[in-house]
Length: 295
Ligand SMILES: Nc1ncnc2c1ncn2[C@@H]1O[C@H](COP(=O)(O)OP(=O)(O)OP(=O)(O)O)[C@@H](O)[C@H]1O
Image (cartoon, rainbow, N blue to C red):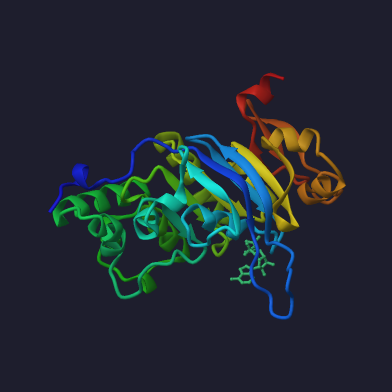
């Protein structure tokens, strides 16, 4: 048996992700040359950054995300983690070394909360006591009461289940965290609370996070950088939330962000001394980074 430190196969530091002209063509019945779901997507996501992939349903966000942990293999192009092609890693080991959170938490229904969180460290060979300590530590970090440890997933609220999903993804201290619409199924208040938690966590942990959403407000609230995608994962624009709001590249981006929508009418405002993005009703939908504030 290995201890926690010996068993942590992945570097604790964050990892840069590079998409090098990745294309994915899924076979489509009756079509010999289907349009690619992802068409020659290229981007470098710096280590420790939180990048949001923002786009409408079907534009290729999930496909992009799953190419990082080899749940989907590209038809051409490469994905590199700190310069290493993911194809050179064993897919199972790779998946265990990368945190993955999806919309419905994906918890194992017949395992208690603590066992769900301990799962990946145990698979990586940590001894039981070390994995248990780590699971309790993560529950604490995610604001989950210890009383929930022995519950089964169906005995949790949606928000609690998502927190457990995040705890489980972080358990083996991965350098990369992939999040696929992780807060899409919870009510708006809990969703905002989870978003705030994620910002707090990221300040503390500095993982490289790729966060998929089609929700503009969520993207503005979370992203160090936002990549707005059209069909085929074509990059419509990439930038900080304030860069996108201040200068949308074209009508598509402006419409998507709701910049020209009189019912949304996003604008900048001072709230308690902070520069924030607010909607028409004055509700804060995002934060502004220091550079934009001083501009
Ligand atoms: N296994 C598959 N086989 C065939 N086509 C697929 C498969 N998975 C995805 N696609 C197609 O690829 C395109 C991109 O899908 P993808 O799930 O990546 O989009 P998305 O932006 O994540 O969408 P959503 O927001 O609805 O989850 C879609 O047209 C989808 O129908």
